[in-house]
Image 1 (cartoon, rainbow, N blue to C red):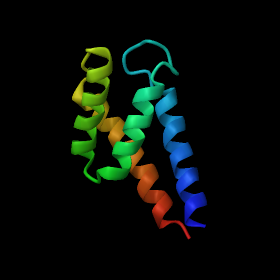
Image 2 (image 1 turned 90 degrees about the horizontal axis):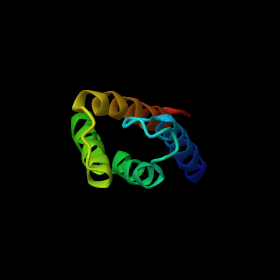
Image 3 (image 1 turned 135 degrees about the horizontal axis):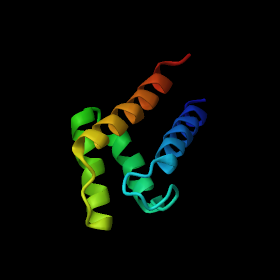
Length: 89
């Protein structure tokens, strides 16, 4: 049962990330980064640390910086998805 919940959580997180277009290249141009961010979501609990990690992942790939405030909003959404799924019965 836990595995199915984890898969559903990952799909929700991936869906949110794949729709995000922080650099204006068009949604769906960030597959590698989405996987890296998904991994970071499971490693980090603090939204500020996650936001910095998201910012670093995209900066490494595209040599452009997403404003930290945008990354913080996304980090909050992703952690909410992760934490809500672990609380469901």
